[in-house]
Picture 1: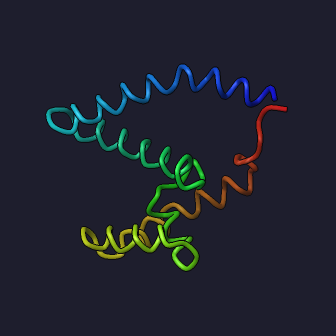
Picture 2 (picture 1 turned 90 degrees about the vertical axis):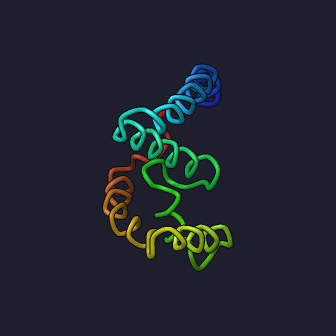
Length: 115
């Protein structure tokens, strides 16, 4: 219960900041530094993976899709779509991110932090 309450209070602060962050990403995408926009998009990608696709917070949607390619329809669609822009994008993302996922699991960073 303590974790749920803390999560709710944190989200009350984070969600408005996330909306502001999204607007900044849109602005930066047109007129700002590419590096700042890329970092913001990467963070948003990880957020969507964790919240929408129930993936790891340290992993992109693309990498998660590659891991789930044989089990989930959404993963097959993501792979099909990204292949339209860059062949084997999801496979490469997973190859790049899998060592980080393995380390996260080994260190237990995915486990509950509040009791």
